[in-house]
Length: 166
Ligand SMILES: [Fe+2]
Image (tube, rainbow, N blue to C red):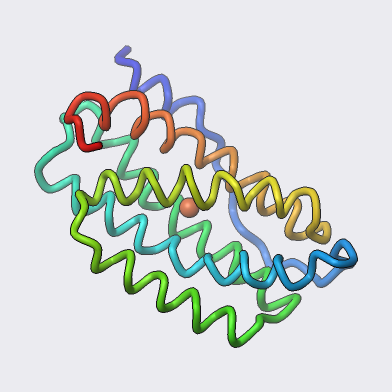
């Protein structure tokens, strides 16, 4: 069995569900809403990966990455359920949309953009949600972290060193 298949088999399937609003940690609310707005980066990350699948990815790694594109759709859905429950900050939403557009327009390789978004943004925000969110947000961020780790592994350990995108 190749190592990519092993990774795939270890992945747990999960289905996002609508949560109900609970209590956020006092004082963390503003940051939570700003961080939640960054969910608008989930689908672009999926698009970055899809884009790279066209040419630069070794055959064996394709299946794992395709499954990660599906994960990004789930992440977007799950965080959308959170905002259904606890609402959004309109200013933070508008700012996140501008950030997303700048990220999409940036000329770096899409593999590198996906890696940086996952490692520098989501990898940091998800534990923050676990420490400061309500029950729904804590569960969602744990589920996202579990699936995110496979994408990080494959990008960081395999693809980026191989192609020297950095
Ligand atoms: Fe994601």
